[in-house]
Length: 217
Image 1 (spheres, rainbow, N blue to C red):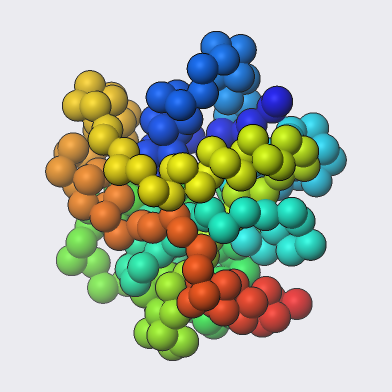
Image 2 (cartoon, rainbow, N blue to C red):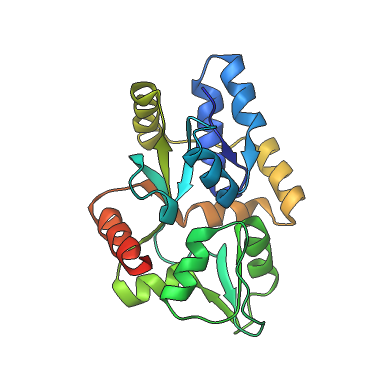
């Protein structure tokens, strides 16, 4: 089974869970090997080069997806528009680019760990707009950035995903320190950020996703 990996901090709890609960060393190696950014993984998934992955919401339409995703409860701090800069999409994320367009927010879109680092280093900058916060403000709904989708191995992945949603994942300090060093953040900032993200897609999340996909058509 080829499970692609988006190596962003927001999915760190999921991949720690995977390593703890998948016994096959071969699958673990595949998960670590198939690393890329969201928009590239979208293409690989649709070409059936990978079996399972977190797919950008905008690319997950008509895919077989589970009720697991990357959800911003309110603000997310890692999907931003810098309104003092010329309009520019982030090549890594189809969903965030579409969201900025739907919300009619002009500027440069930045996502992921680089956006999170930018936010924490420039918190007083009034030119930073948090897209998830703006969506929540406008529609009173959490925003779903990605969904866990599958091409095969449905029962195995489904069981794994359901177990993840009911498991409290503890991130070892040495891993937190690795990500802190890589990103330029503190371990506290990483944990604070992860508290703003949920992974369960329930009624409100599905309603939000439906609205976003309709608006993005």
